[in-house]
Amino acid sequence: MPEGPSVKRFQLHCSPFVGQTVTKVGGQTRQINPDDLKSLTLLDTQVHGKNLFLAFGPIQEVAPCSESSSPGPSSCQPSVPGMAISEDNSFPLRMEENAHHLLEEPEVNDLPLLTDNATEQPREWLRFHFGLYGSIRANEFARASKANKRGDWRDPIPRLILHFDGRGFLVFYNCRIHRCSCPTAQPATDILNPEFDREQALEALRKATPVCTTLLDQSHFSGLGNVIKNEVLYLAKIHPLSLGSLLPPSGLKSLLDHALQFSSEWLNSQLQGRGLRPQIYGKDRCPAGHEVMKDTFGPVDGLKRLTWWCPQCQLAVLPEESHDN
Ligand SMILES: [Zn+2]
Image 1: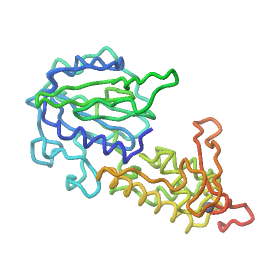
Image 2 (image 1 turned 30 degrees about the vertical axis):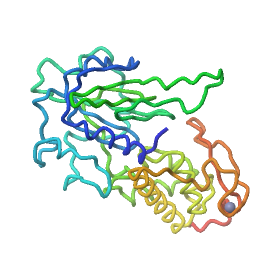
Image 3 (image 1 turned 60 degrees about the vertical axis):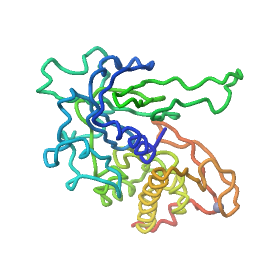
Image 4 (image 1 turned 90 degrees about the vertical axis):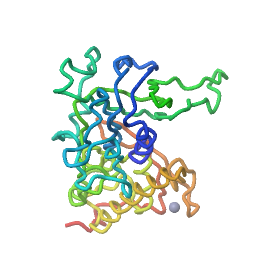
């Protein structure tokens, strides 16, 4: 599924539509009723971890992005490092205490998008969580890039299409859409947020858990996905199954540095329209020419993910080699 840097790019497709009103809807989602969005204005866009949040409300509510910022859609810029961001990095609505809360939020299918008293609850948020082939297109539809197994060239089916009064449109593919009262923001664990807490992250990595599992734990590394995991373990020369508790502090620090640097570089290349050139993810050989191993690793009772590593560049740390005490 798209990782933090990719979802930030999706957000950039949406940002130009802030302040515009939905005139026509389409798409095959059954998680919300797209008709509820008609005549509402896109008020804000945010990304937290791997989730995109869009706020909709009545047109007169194009209003402050946060209490401290000046009114108008121009104040609602995406929170991308190096790009416009409010001084205090504040979020327009209250933060949830736990990032997991939103993930576990039950679907509410039949509620109108706005309450009767719009002045009390001027905006409603939609959370988009993207699947493996999830994406957003602006002013164009995705086309089939290859035939399926039956030889059909069938274009991907949009989950949601929003036409705006500025004549442009957004198309959402392969995503789950949920209503929520406000975005869940945990800047301290968001790998693309300047407020990311390094100490907290190092503490998580130090656990007696395979580092490849800890890296994918969204409560510690929100926005970090399988591509980043594989690449940074290779860059830090750490075997994916190494227990964090057995790695030297310098190794953990190096892993964290690589994770943050790789994520931010990936984001920058996304913003410049450049793709990612993985060194190990999906590769047969590492850049040094060694044969790459591939297996599925994950928690005993959790999701297992494909993992690539070089047995020569990423040596396993055995307990007797431990530098920890
Ligand atoms: Zn190698």
